[in-house]
Amino acid sequence: MKITSYTTFALRSLQLAALKAPELIRVDDVVRVHGLARPHIVKIVHALGVAGYVDTQRGRRGGFRLARPASDIVIGDVVRLTEGPLDLVECFSPDTNTCPLIGICKLSRALQTAADAFMAVLDDLTLADIASNRGDLLARIAPLEEGIVAPMRKTR
Image (tube, rainbow, N blue to C red; front, side, top):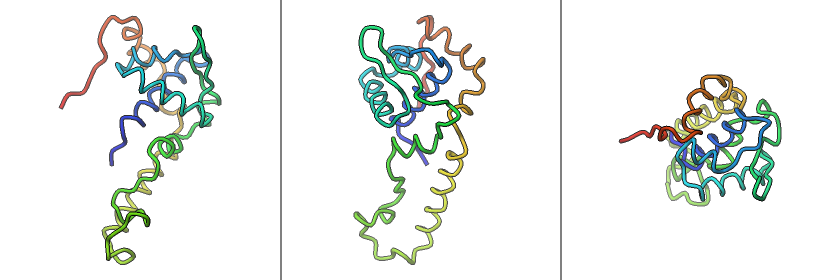
């Protein structure tokens, strides 16, 4: 299974907010630390604010911070917000299904079980869990915050 970059960026933004809590985080902080495009982060932070995960503050000294404790933010819920339904195959969606095997296909059932297991793991994980190694994470991002080195990027 693979989640979109939108979801990854949302989780990175929330993680940085958890690491810096209760400080206000600027969109530019996320952009600098993770090497992401500013318009994407603005859109993500807005969506996270509308969903109640972050409080946003406009203006020159604006930014965002967690709207609730990191231990109350379930990663599975964030993934559902940002990904929508995890329809691995077309037959998962009654609106788009064209497969005549719906209801009797063992592959479909196995894929649904796999998707459910994937989400069950994420439902047992909170933002506090993914920020629990705070010291290591802050040490890794410190040079990035100062603009000393470019973020590490995965190449294919």
